[in-house]
Length: 434
Ligand code: ADP
Image 1: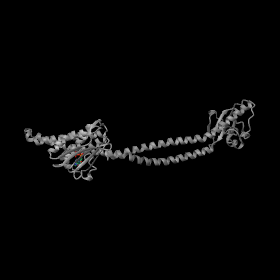
Image 2: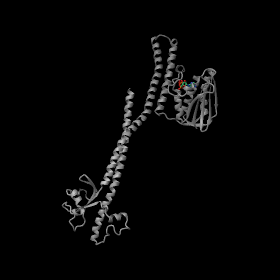
Image 3: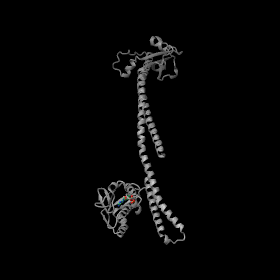
Image 4: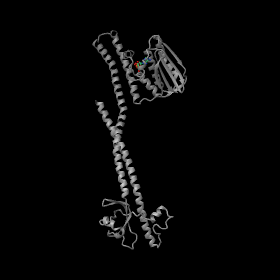
């Protein structure tokens, strides 16, 4: 219940974060495109205004210098497009000539329809001098305009205002704005669904590892509690009989000691795995001669096996050295040899074979013991997995050995797998890179 609330809250957080990220990306994208469209559309009108202004200024200067200017539309076939535009001004441009008191001087030229309908109340606004500005007349018609001081001092004109109608551009921009708004709504709906799916996907591995961790802690506590309870009981028994001799309570003491050993092994295995999980443990790499190491690890096991009437054999054909962590490899072989001894009986045999295959060193550890059921083979590397719990308890196993073995092999970028040994028993095959 508690976990579910935390997970749900976390998922909601992920979802909102995803949604925010999507929205910010889309908003930036939209602003850039919208700004670009607006700029491109108006840039054409602005260019026309500038050209018109240059033409007017040139005309005044030409007049002063008695220069003869060509007539619009005539004799200008060889001119560049810009010069052509300068000679043939855009008919959309309206020129307003203001005197210094803010009165329009050229009402007649503007056209009475336009002047009477729209310009009678229009005021001169000098705040944006020499800057192309946006304005609207009666909130109906949109214009870009350029206001500048008249350079000709021989007339009453103080300011010239060039207006160009940009209603067509404005319509395109409004339509584009509508399109962007509709797209935004669709995008937000899609983002919500995408964020939900993504947040669910993000939560999956977290939930999995959380559950695994919780299971691990539960199993570990359970495994720790059993020996602790046994030790506590035995010690209480001893405490109740303080005058008894040690020899009479030998069994209790021996059992407590064996459970203490079990506890000590368990805690050290748990620590190894906890460190492996937090990626805290690094390998100490050095040149390791595989056959030499195998021979060294096997020597005491050979003696124990023979003392238990088990046959022990070695077939070592890998005289090379590889870059590996000797202590970890030693630990790996000990885990496998311990198991081989644990799960074999009298007259069984245990053997280690090494050889080179492609670019890999192969180590095979086989035994003719009780074997592992084929359907259980996929589970044996899982933490705390034991095929037969009762038997494992007898042999002292808690089901962590093979998890550690797998971690060591994977840390060396190798592989470990288990298979049935020819007729009877188990074979572990380890492959390590050269
Ligand atoms: P344990 O400490 O119980 O041996 P391991 O992780 O080493 O834990 O092994 C997990 C389980 O795999 C064991 O409980 C046992 O059932 C099975 N197993 C491992 N090695 C062998 C083997 N050589 N022969 C038969 N079963 C084995």
